[in-house]
Length: 476
Ligand SMILES: *[C@@H]1O[C@H](CO)[C@@H](O)[C@H](O)[C@H]1NC(C)=O
Image 1 (tube, rainbow, N blue to C red):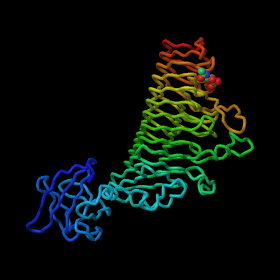
Image 2 (cartoon, rainbow, N blue to C red):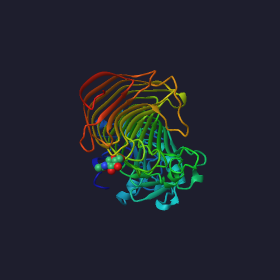
Image 3 (spheres, rainbow, N blue to C red):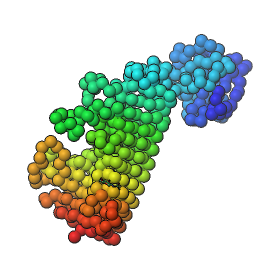
């Protein structure tokens, strides 16, 4: 056994059943049970005041191999009972051959064991699907993408629900298939995790969308091409209590990481990287999601660093470094006369360098709904083209946008302690709707200068300021 495993107790129940048992607790808090005759005298009930396991014949027999003398079962203890962990009980020889062999079976489902090659060439999609099925249906299953492989994948949907305690560990590298025909069924998504509760995805590995081919065909790069949606590299859809941490996502076909219709999300320690010239490659996109914290992440892409759109509430982003890219954005909202709602957004502790926008709210004419209760605080800008901007005349289509009467209402927006440099003279721009002016806008402690340290200017149209303290530049 490897040294990270802590041997907690060794005890022997001999007289009655001649079965000796060894119980291990590992650092994860999971417990493992070893016993001869585990099949004929399965051990299930936990008792003896926490000192051992009693034999019990009711353990689902037949699901456990017993080809060798020692059986090894995984499960957990609660309410005085031993709960075996599904079908992943395994058999080990005694003494243990190697920690590698034990590792390979301790609820860890490595894609390599299901045929993945990880050689940087072979398509590993089917192996990933098989491994997912096994890991997802095992209690406390762990889906593992091992460290030294480069795995090529076509579009794939990892669906739940899975058994409790399920985890995904991405240690290695995952790369997208470059062949457009692989995406014919759905050109909008590459890797999708959906209908999962209490999921954790982590491991320090990387996910590469191989986006180059898609970028060159984007209508933003080649204007002779029609405007089509390219895949989002990683999508979490319908996930509650989700944690995504310690991953690099790069060169997405279009957006990098989307949270759609999720609740209670923590996204931390992420690196999202694509060239400045890559079109529509938003870093982290939040849609229809509530209670999400994005923390401690570096985002360098060709589009929005973080974009927060309709149906999102209680969004917090902190310790974010952006640039290059288009900055932190709420919206766009109200496209195609849609009704969009975003509220309670708190962005604090962000550094933006060389981005085209700093903190932006963008809405199309003709939309409805609202963007309200928004606070941008403690933000440092370096050479940002539009450091503070509300743009209610946003227009990013192929066609010219004409003037329309309705608009998404923007209200209660606080800008506090925002300083640094603007790449242009206009460091602050409120271009609000004539029919629905921006309301309750507060500016506190703004100090923005031009890159040459000259005084910057503000442009303020249809904006109702509630509070303006220590502000430079200020609205005329
Ligand atoms: C500032 O930004 C402008 C426009 O994005 C760019 O041309 C210029 O090189 C940048 N300056 C510095 C010092 O980074």
